[in-house]
Length: 520
Image (cartoon, rainbow, N blue to C red; front, side):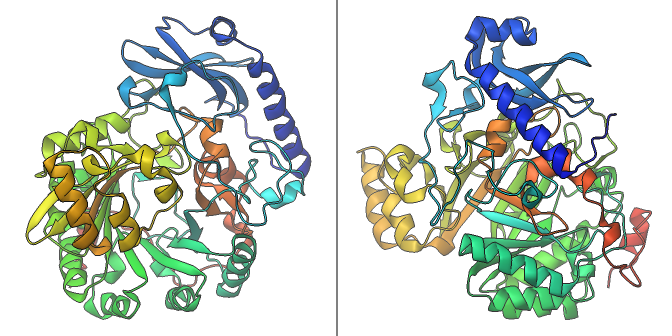
């Protein structure tokens, strides 16, 4: 594989390549685009965009199109030829965006409209994904995210981990850490630009291995310009009550994002080379009793754990403090030791349908809606209200088009905002009841959400989604980047070797038994 060293001149060259491709694609109609990329068996052209050659990671022109009810991307690299990749298994779930600007749209009836984001004090003067400022400020990325909405930002504070997962987008296996003082400087710089951050995720590796982990948490808790602290974790360091109990004092601002891929030993050994299910179940029960909000995060791999989604959702419904189930189809970035086939992968529709088939909840296909933020293909969600022992889906009572101005770019809705949007859809008895109850009874704390977040890799890469990204990550120098762009093409140019060594870093668990025997 060709590895492009990232320098300032390389960044400028890549930006110029993007501009040239945009100009070319803007001139191509559907027939010309089909010929340009060598697409075959096209039932309907949807749009052109810019993607990556999966071999050399160069930017290449791509056509997104339907074939036999599925959505594919056809690409042409001058060096490695033509390739295809599956984007969506059910074309009915695929949407274009009014913010798609890297090529041309050919299916306006499929456009999901989201208001343009206008950040306070925005100083961008260029087109999508471009910058007029210092290219070095983009760090390991190419696309300027500084004026995009930041719904969440991941800050990796260490590349060390106490597991050796076979699936890891960051390929964490090091012994380095981000100094606390450096983190504070990076955070201050982001806040100076953004004004406020809805959520900051402390991650890694396993963030809790950092020797000053609790200083990070405490600093974010005291920082009034940060609304929420998200803590992604595999849960092992919190197996001892003495550690998990320390989370309670931050519960009003904290959410624990607990890895929970499934409930069977086979699933966890396949994905994580460990079997920590009992540890995690006890941790869920303990945090639930202590009032600490949680999200259960499922990395979903085809033919591995896609039959366990309902079981994880049902587990979450048993605990009032589990607020979200996040389902993330595997992305082939970083470390992925299972089979890779770009024409056979789990897509958003596959996950949604499996939830409807497996979970002990009443929901319909129409109850899944795009998250109205960066791009409609970046995430879909369905929402239930839990109160008085009843679990009921409320998405069917939300007219998203009418409510768009109230919910766009908001990941955290207050009780008042929530009551304002529920019950707007339809005029029947149930809708009237929902409208009445929504205005008097429903609280934001009653919400239970199931979200699907399909991240992109070198096969599914779509520059339109990158340009409008709101799911950000910082590189080791504190630059704000698109999460998918960084993992696909930026991480390899951002080594941790310049950072200090984590003394006493734990070696990854080599066997499932090594984890199980450490249970208290």
